[in-house]
Length: 176
Image 1 (cartoon, rainbow, N blue to C red):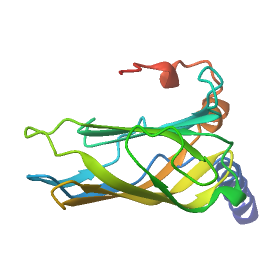
Image 2: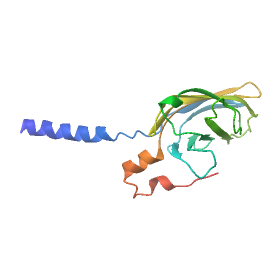
Image 3: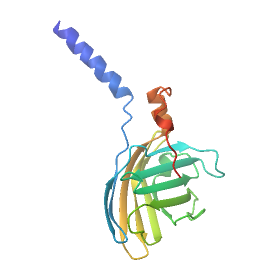
Image 4: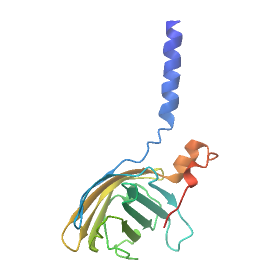
């Protein structure tokens, strides 16, 4: 009997270990102008292949603190191990990077006091593949304040594969 119990525990462990699609994790700290920030990532943060926008291959959607901070980042290529490292960007730029990887970056900050414009940004991908993107980014505002955010997010495809695609969980509100 004892061996049987051990065997079935092992089976359960192996099964769950096969598809560990961890939920998004990350946070933003620092301040956006006059507003101090300490917010965690929202569960709908994700990235997905996006062929509807010209030049864009992948859309990375990161939001924190219940959409207090929302970032839409258009990437020119599929995330892969070669797309790690630091990339600079300017708000709204189409082609700011030497290799053009960050096609477009839009920031939406819904704090009570509107922050000053973003003057400089840098994003670093420490891990990137078709299922997961991990890294951090820093924003500097025109008044010198800075916000730092971390992210570890799954791809929509990976989530769909895991949920069996029939439950409609991942097709909710696309607010712009």
